[in-house]
Length: 236
Image 1 (cartoon, one colour):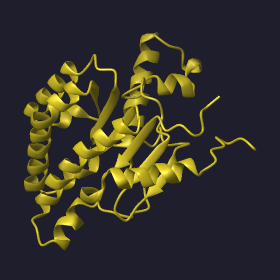
Image 2: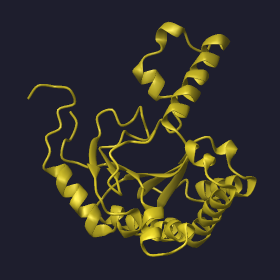
Image 3: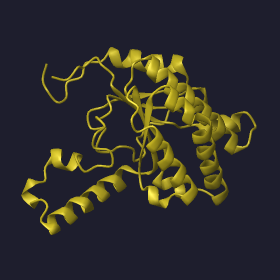
Image 4: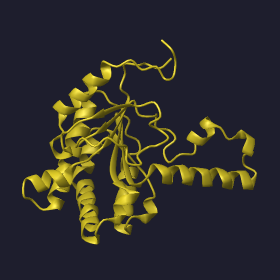
């Protein structure tokens, strides 16, 4: 039986960095820098609230369409975040994982991410999943290809493919589905994020831009969740 009132996993679409910067007359990239600071605060706040899993939509497959200057700036911010906060993950015993088409990332970024994942692999106080070069449709396609290859090789039978087997072949099969999905900046869409995993997640949308999203705002999202009745398709 699912614990309806326990938030075990939160997924966040971190939106509004650019608008935050524009309203302050700052360069677009400065919004992303402040967004990275917000990431650190929310990781710490999530641990305080007893959240075991936190998935952050850091860079989508569609973000590659942005200008080279902005993409390069985002990659630099990611590298700086890893360099600055790796010890925070280690000290707090938080495991770092990544999901997405990581092969599309610059080599230096891939190497630094892989090293951070390796150094935190045995941590057991919480897990932060960075969705980078990630798209929900891409994950479903990649999973379908993976299962097709297994079927062709004789490792599985096509008739054996069901929801359970499909889920076991996603990017991070050991991570439970999110209980709560938060989107900042007020946009009412999921933007190709965790399309399979969000099937029965509760949604919370706030007009707050991501750089201003803090522990207090996270608390508001959790309070909203606790007031809801989760049915999972059942009649109660």
